[in-house]
Length: 273
Image 1 (tube, helix red, strand yellow):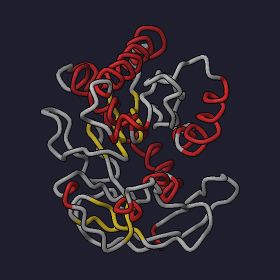
Image 2: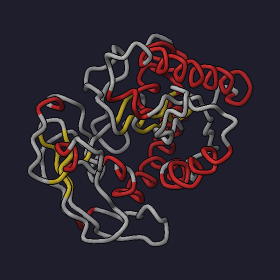
Image 3: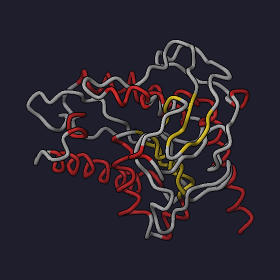
């Protein structure tokens, strides 16, 4: 699991120093709690820390410090994945899950280490690449998964208020986490097993419907506390986004799907023997 940005300042650093104890605690309390926990029932969970780039780097692409900051963050993620493969994986299947900045690095990781590696492709159950710009044909050998049990490919979505049409996202991958299909059919809220708010204190069944529309996943207003929209000063156009709760809105659906894909992968391998 590659966590999203939890370092919102610069404090003289474009990358978060790992020595910041308060930042590590904040990452645990937010991203790990709300996202990584989804996958805890699917297998052993590895959630490495890395010298993440500051949030500012995603809004200053022309700044000469931006790309080096992202490269340093990615280098840590890559090193962590390679260490995992060398010391903990032992040839077992794996899920790659990420969000936001984490997905930026996970995308690159798949390009550099997995897409052209037949053995790692065989071990990959699925890559949940949520909260960033991912194309359906992003990879040569890792397809966009089209149902709830397919393995060996990618899944992704970006949630926004129903009715949103955001041109920069046209053509992006949208997996509907209520049906796990790629079509534009509206999936009713009755299929939503339950969302979990950011305070992690309850389960909200039938929280919202979901529908793919031109690169974004439309959702309805949850009408419950704990599912806030994105608020960035000076960028009102992003107020329609539920980016922060991309996973929370479908918490139980994603949790059950991860376990189902593990079972499907295991059964598929058993049939080959």
